[in-house]
Length: 441
Image (cartoon, rainbow, N blue to C red):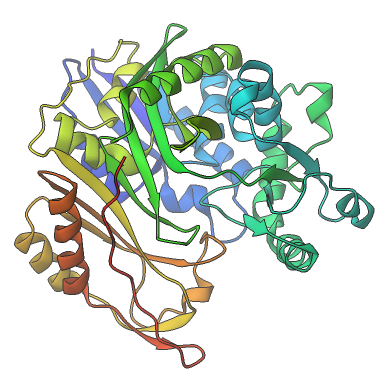
């Protein structure tokens, strides 16, 4: 009998990939909640989403065999709540929160891999006295204990920058703080976390180096990994440029990352699901520092795995949902190297020209197996876009592959020129998406 698999946060681009997955199992995919429903237009509507999902599942005429998702908050937390209610395999909500609640996660990391955990603290951004008592020295990062897409993450070097960051956080943290508090109300929290809610911020020392991400899954209590991806920022900026796979880090560094990740996931009691964990590596000192744990696969990596390995990580998600240990290929794809690029600009402006559907079709035809996601339309004001980092505007995503890194970056720069964005600056400043340079190990 066919199994029914329900997906929370379904969106057009990624569902095309999910529906292409081929595994030796009989199943049907059902879009339980759309991406627009879970993201909302104001506060993340977590309770409304839970109510809609329950109503739709109750009305479904058939078995409910799996509930899964591939997006960040609130999808990562809605899935274990619903799976718990319907008796389905899933990580516990508490194990997911030990990954997602940044302060709780740092406390747990420090117990297992203290040498890879940066100095950190917690503060209520609405408490002036607490802000004055922050004991992490400048420079440091301040960000909500639950973040998404670097929302409200600020690197501050002095008191003036801290005051600016606090002002912005106070204005905007409710969008994620209030719904995160609702999620926390569904969990059993330890005493040290019970009073650290969604309107608190974590303070973290600045760590740097080569950023990378290990992606894998846990099946029956045993962590596995299937790839390490380099995460590369724009030159001399903190804004993210691209994911690139496979990583060019030394093998000994990859082994250390794998071992640390295995120890940590077992400690967190995270099971029966995918994960990706981000690290910084400093080549001169060979120091490794953990940035964050994401209790989900990275949909940003999916196309890269498909191009290099011959299958997307959505295959792993579906096999786990069906209670099967994943059987994932390695290096059976068409390309030796692949990336997802984030096209960004760094000043506010109004989009005066953006590619249309015909332009995208022409560019994808000119560069076969390239996929382009537009994030803006003509007339959009960049500063009015939701869920941007604090220093740039993410206007398009380009997924492409090549034989090696040099060919990959040359191909991307030609695609970037073909996309041809134009902006009316606000104020009268030049705005453009910079070309990219090659990296070395």
